[in-house]
Image (cartoon, rainbow, N blue to C red; front, side, top):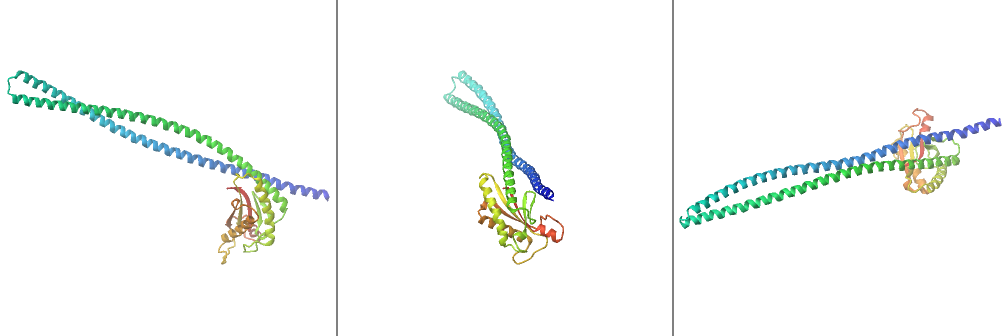
Length: 338
């Protein structure tokens, strides 16, 4: 008889540990997947920002190309104008030579004709000076255009180098983020396991307190009367034990570890419509808030705890009987990451 009792005690001690190890492993896998998705999100955000910069640079290059085409068109027009002026200058010089020849051959002409000829020569000189000034201005514009082209090429080269540097930084940041998140997952899993172990020691094996996955589940009757959200005295005693464990564990956790104790309220699927609680959502949320407020009064930091009401929409048992309703009326405690 003694051997049989010892054998049953060993099985009882072995099974919760096995469930705890399995659930912790599953939690780690799920959290790693979540971390991977988060990392991919941040990477996609960084890549999207890079694409935006590239689009902006492409637009600038397009605008500069249009400007270059316009400047080239202006240069062509200037060259045509210069050619026209040179042709006009050549014609004027020929006319000047002709006039000078006429002047030389007709030294005996009247002084009035000489004065007219001199005026024509002066006008031709002025026209030549204007043509030379126009040519100089066109040359200056061409030099300015070449400088702008050189600046554009330099800007394009700098943008390409910056893009390569951004891609390298994105890759490095992604690797560092994955390593940091993996370390945080390991730390949180270790403290969560420690929390489960301490809570089991304090609460013992009670039928109204169970471990479901990564959560401790208390039946609502431990804390509240039916349809109420006011803590019972015996429920406060259980919360005192839980609060003491959380406070001690919080002192051990690193300050930069983003842990949080989530308190989830659940009800059965039977509707409640009272003046105080118009729906099961209101009842489940009010119960979760009552538990959170009491635990905060026992020393748990308010920024490390959260209240959530699920109403009847997350049942553990979908049957419609007393046992299923009793199982679904519950308060769950879970240490998770913000």
